[in-house]
Image (cartoon, rainbow, N blue to C red; front, top):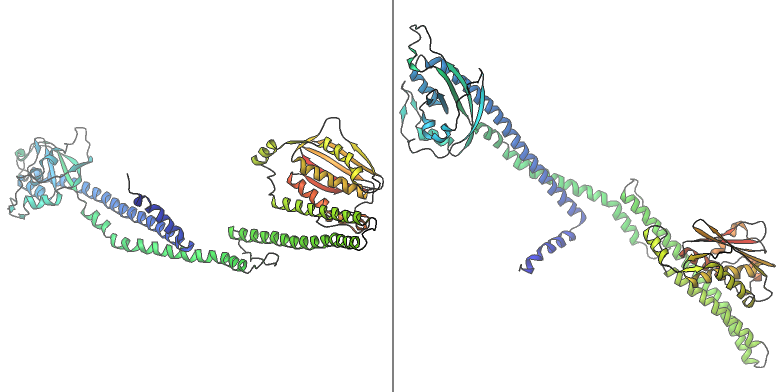
Length: 522
């Protein structure tokens, strides 16, 4: 079972990282990335320089092998002792028809010498090859003893020479040379008994010393350049992030001055078209919405107070009269009417408050379709017929003539029956109050929609007021003189309910009277 304390370490590390400022995290991330990339680049440069130098060393070794072959061919027939000078002074292995020539390298590394194959019989002039060979521990026969070449030149002992190659894996550059026994003997060319005729293979070790030295010479410079590059990138990221965050800081500073919605404060919008600019514009749009809501709320409170004051004042006056003249007829009736009007106004206010606090459902997408499938179906035809029967009993005074035009098949829509009833009731009450003699309700089905047109033959609505009448507590001047109980909230409630059912409600232009067109999705 692992220690729980150890399991909490990554979380603490992430928490520590999350608490760092954005500039610090960006600079650290950029510096770490630069360090990794610069380190990888330094390794690649070191490797490339080493590989380039090794390629050059292989070429030099092969050229040296060919030079040794030529020298061997030139002197072998003349001076067999000079061959010992060649193979003793260089890390060279010469393989003749009878096997490798005796020298310090085969003596020190017999396994490596046996791993070198002779040139194939099909090798052409200029043939060359590279054979990888591992030089292990020098053999015990390779002793540390001073020696001299046959010509008397001092040479390094076998063990000292072998120490240079011990433990390494090197390439041996090999080439071949053919030695033929001359048919004519001259004083300059001794007897061919010095070496048998045949094909000889000469191998020269490709040492890595120069390549390693050239590559290692870069290490001090790279060791200083890599951290310096990472530091420069981190500082650049810090400066760039600081400059990039200045507009955000300006936005935050301006938002901090917003004491309350409706103050008209707006954040500065940067000139660049980027995410910060879009953030500033979205913030200003949000402030516009907040200002509009604040203005609407203040106006709503003022209008509500004004509308409530009248029925409350009238109710109080009526009750005072009833107390002063208890036998006066009609006093209680007037009080009841005032209380009823006050009750209707309070109910309208509560309905608007509920609609404002209910989020609008999605209009498109999977959630909207799923919501439409799960909502109950409401028969709009039956609902209108019920309301047309109620209007004459609830509308004060002489009710106009009510007419319904609808197809034989019932029209149903998804939604809340109580809300839809309230919506249609408000439209019909408004039409009945403003009609002269006739109210006509027309139901029709359209592709994807159900339309309900409510027309009255009263005065037409001016074009400038066709949207204003849907604002809360809005009543036209003509309506105020004829309205016997409207509070100016009916059409506002109707439109809010329509929007919550993803529909539309508009006042359409007509030649006579006024028409409200309701469209609900089917």
